[in-house]
Image (cartoon, rainbow, N blue to C red; front, top):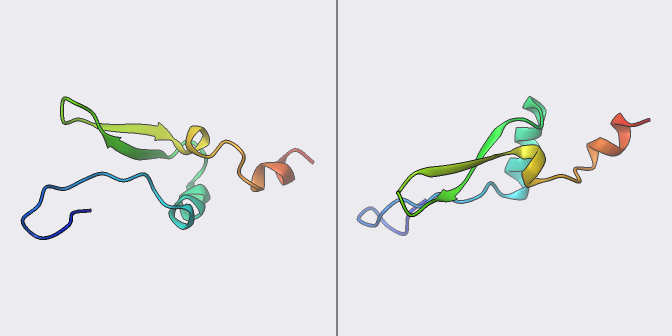
Length: 61
């Protein structure tokens, strides 16, 4: 995202609705979570970003 057409881009962690949609592709989908001091995008698997997803309750039964 960015504030306007002249500002720098920023990487934001996926919102809750986006995380729900990403979950259809599995909990190992990589999600961008931000940019480090070297201007590299950082990623985490969805499983680490949202470890207590409601669907996990039904998978264990």
